[in-house]
Structures are given as C-alpha cells and as structure tokens.
Amino acid sequence: MNFTERLRSSQRNQNSLLCIGLDVDPQRIPNHLQAFPEPVLEFNKRIIEATYDLVCAYKLNLAFYESLGERAWKTVIQTLSFIPKDVMTIGDGKRGDIGNTSEQYAKTLFSDFGFDATTVNPYMGFDSVEPFLRDLEKGVFILALTSNTGSKDFQRLKAGGKPVYEKVASAAKKWNTKRNIGLVVGATHPKELRSIRKITPDIPLLIPGIGKQDGDLQASVRYGCDKSGELAVLNVGRSVMYSSAREDFASAARREATTMRDLIRRYQEEFFR
Amino acid sequence: MNFTERLRSSQRNQNSLLCIGLDVDPQRIPNHLQAFPEPVLEFNKRIIEATYDLVCAYKLNLAFYESLGERAWKTVIQTLSFIPKDVMTIGDGKRGDIGNTSEQYAKTLFSDFGFDATTVNPYMGFDSVEPFLRDLEKGVFILALTSNTGSKDFQRLKAGGKPVYEKVASAAKKWNTKRNIGLVVGATHPKELRSIRKITPDIPLLIPGIGKQDGDLQASVRYGCDKSGELAVLNVGRSVMYSSAREDFASAARREATTMRDLIRRYQEEFFR
Image 1 (cartoon, rainbow over the protein chains, first blue to last red):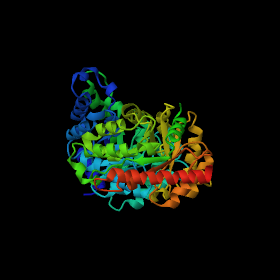
Image 2 (image 1 turned 180 degrees about the horizontal axis):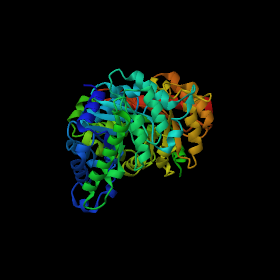
Image 3 (image 1 turned 90 degrees about the vertical axis):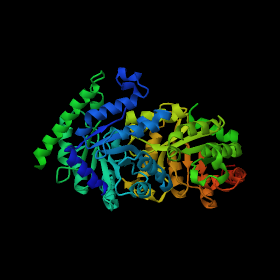
Image 4 (image 1 turned 45 degrees about the vertical axis):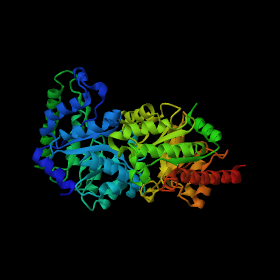
C-alpha cells in the first residue's frame, strides 16, 4: 500500500488528523523524571501511552535526538517501539544531499530506524529527493512553505510570476508517481496553504506551526484537507508536551491533545460533512 | 579569530587549498581492514595520517556516519581527534530548521563534536541559519549552487532577473557581519562560480564535485579563489579515499592527494602570482 493510502487508513482508524511532535528538550522534562536512567525515553513513553489513541502520527525531530549524543540511536529506536503499528511515524530531519549521500540518509531513516515517513529539503532538486522515494510505502514530505519567518527569504521569491514554494508543489506533483510524496506547509500561511492544496489536491500535507491559536487551526483544516476532509497532518509539539511540568504532565498532555483532536473534528464536520 | 581568518591561516600554514572528504562507505573499505573492531575508524585514521600535511581541511559527511548506527557518535569524535588542530574540520550535514531546532543542530556540530565549520541549507531562510552563526570562530558554508544535476530544479530559477543561487549569495554577504560565512558552489559550474565570487569577493567558497577532470579544477582555482589566491576550499572525496582497495590504500591516497594539491598550487601560481 502506498504511503498516501497508509496515512489515510491511519487517519480513519484513529479518527484523527492530529500529529504530536516529540521534540524533547532534556531541560524541559519534568523534574521527577530526571531520576530515570533515560529521562527522555521515559518522558516519550509516558506521552505516547497517554496519547496514542488520539493521533494519526508522531513526529520526531532528529535534531533533538542527535543532541543526546551516544544515546541518540537507542532513544529513537526505543521510542518508535512504543508507537502502535497503525500510527504513522515521521522522522523530521529535513535532509537532502547528492544522490549517494541521500541514499545513506534514506537507509538510516527508513531501514535502520524504521520511520514510516520523513521530511526532505528540496533545495538540491530531484536527484537529492529521489533516493527517499524508492519504497512506495515510505512517505516523503518535501518542504514547500515553512512556518518560520525566514520562509519569506527564498521560498516566496517569485520566478516567472510564481513563488518558489508553488514551483516546489508543482515539482512534487510531477515526481509523485508512487503516491508517497507529501508537502510541508506551515499553519501560519492559510492563504498559501489553500493555493498549494489547489495545485496538489490529493497528497498529504504536513502542517506544523499550530499553537493554541484557534484561527490557524480552523484554516489549516479547511484548506489543508483533501476533498474527503483528510490527508492534512496537523502537528502540535510544545503546547502538548509541556502543558504541565509536574507529575501530571502525561494526563495534562492527554487533555491538551484531546482538545486539539476534537477541535479538528469539529472543523472537519463544519467543512466536509 | 573569525572563521575566515582561521581558514586563511590554515591554508597558508599548510600551503594547500585541498580538502579531503571522509565520506566513508563501510562496503568500500579495503578488505584487510574489516578485521579491525572499528573498520571505518581505522580507515579514517590511516587516511588522515597519510594526508594531514597536504590539506587545509577534512570534510565529514554526516550521512555516512549516521548510517553506522550506535557507533556513529564515537566514530566522529575519534576521527576528529586524529586531525591536527590547525587543519579545519567541516561537518557536512546541510542542516537547517526553525530557530530552536537549528540551535540543537549547532550545539551537536560545534559544541559536542567540535567541528570548525558546517554546511547549511538556506531554503528556510535567515532564522534557520542564524543559530549556526553565533560563534564567530565557527564557519557556516551555505549551499548556493550545488554540484549535482538537480541544482537546476530550484537553485537556477530566476527571480527578478537573478537566479536563486545569486540571491543566496547576496543574502550571505549581508548576513556575514561576523566574517564566518562561506558558500558551497559545485566545481561543475565554473561560469557561475565566477559570478558568485564577484558578488562575494572575500568569503570562503567550499567547492565540491572535483573528480579527476583537470578542467574543472583549473577553473575552480581561477574563479573560486579570492584576490590573494586563497579562500577556495577544493574538496575531493572518493578519488582520493578509494584510489586503491588494497593494502597500499593509504599511500595511494597520499599520492593522489599530492597530485591534486600540486596541481592546485600550479594554478595558484598561474593566476595569482
């Protein structure tokens, strides 16, 4: 089954478009967990146990794991082992290099770690993305228009009347022969999200940058979903993970995640039912 | 001392613009090294011992180390420990993410591993690059025009009459208040290398993609150097590392590296003395 259908299936089974970003900063882990031999792992385990029925995906930003040093490798592998099979896992590395190098990155992410999907930076063009696309079951979210302020510097440059991020979306559409490509579009750009969804009506969109602003979330569901009200992957990170710094952090995370999932459902009802 | 001056000093002391890419594929290591507990480390050690007086820098592509799994971290740290202090080390990761994430990448590369420089992907804009720039001693080579065929897909798009890679060069110039920014320009684009050098006359240029083609190397020295015939970092990888697959691999690598260094010197004489 290609990645797009795997994701759709996960979203239907879980009845959720929510993705939780497990980008754990060791310094923000509740104090009482610091006594464990692997505080980050313990934190992830409890967050996953408290939320796995509420999400279609977890996203691990590799920067936060790399910075654990020697323990990085095992922490990723073991974190992934806590996640049920029908919930998608995204290794967020934004990699991209010449062919033989991207091959190495793809091997690490998909074969060694076993992520279901990854994020890829398009700047180096097709041959830098292609090695990630070889297995149709594995998803590749290509950066189009990111949520940060720097997205204006190059992504919004106009080339032949069209912004670069739309060129990326058009290229992604052309490259998507195996139905395993998606795009990353920040929730901070609802108007542009809409135009990207028009260019690529039927691919997954990974949408980070949702905080607690109700407005962004509403627009992200409305413009980020396909016709069936699916294939938007709405990522929340810190607002769920750190909703409490005390012993109740896992139940606080569950409460926050439930609120988000239900809000998303409400907007799905409003715009697609 | 800022990175640009550190690099210049290394190039003068070593009398070399050559950089060797230690992008080791475990399957291409000579057979007789496979008996060692850490074949990649043993290979790197011997290549470094045989070439450290011939180069201004070594570049480690992180993809090849990540794919070693649990041994990755130590292999990087120990490889770097074999390299003399006045030879620059470049952690080639092409990272780039939103601010708090780029901070983590910068910490890993510069503080934990202790690389002197890194490569960064500009697609996400200034705030994705800025965390790498905070220490003026540490160099940041921003991808401008890469050596692969996919460089045409987005890097060469014209925006307001100028290709994207020139926009990146102009931005790099503007951001370079600490004199620690450089650019990556593939040796496969000599004409464009020349135009980039005109935009940024006094910053380091990391130039990969040199094989055994004499032509590219000549143009890369001619157009890649600053006025003093310096600040081009000419990277060779596989042609040095794998010049022999037998027991003589280290001396074969030395021979190949010497040839390259001397050719570069000859072109420096020709164009700058």
